[in-house]
Length: 152
Image 1: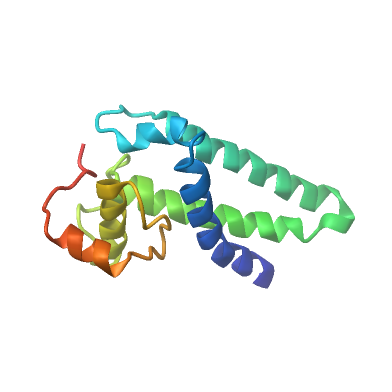
Image 2: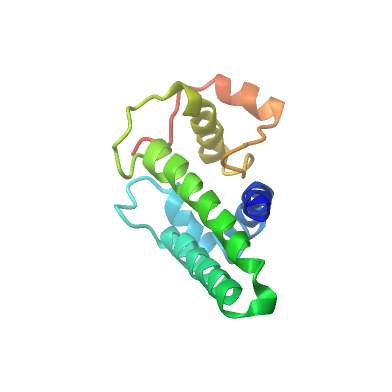
């Protein structure tokens, strides 16, 4: 259980680094750009990222349950899967309303939505999702605009 919890917590900085250097990198932005363009449709090229990462995680879990000496990988994969589910819930279900099953505003989730709004406004920080670190100067700049690039 502890290994899975650690994997869950470690995924936030790992995700932020992937988002910053891969998704917003020269090559990775080719797919991720679709996520920053309004009206991309129900499916985006960017959706290949979570599908690919899920495939890697399934492989990690399979190795953990199939290879005795790699047993620790099963709870690591479970923690990564739990993080992925939380990320998808916050990002896709709540923020981008790709599955509009929640109220438009949930007070507890609004700081996460605001962090992601800032990310979409400037295509920069914050790159994390569940604990977005927004630079103070960027937060002040965003407070001066009502623009919401999250509504499509």
